Length: 65
Image (cartoon, rainbow, N blue to C red; front, side):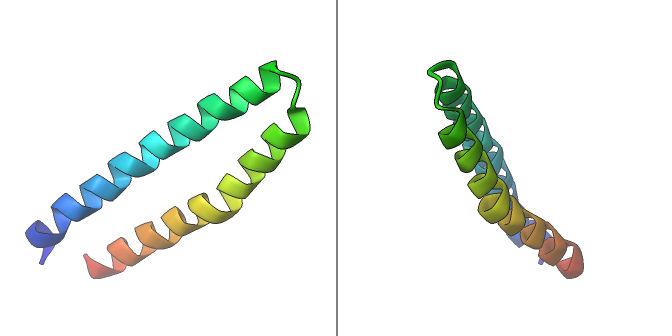
């Protein structure tokens, strides 16, 4: 099953990193514009939701293999 799953896993990992880079860039822009609260809220939401999903995804993949 590994070879069949690998392209999907790699795609999810790649998009996860690209998504994080985009969120980080926007957070940096908000900080430069003086919107510190909004930048912090965005960062917290990302970590709470997306990072939590990625942790779950990694654990699931480890169980499969």
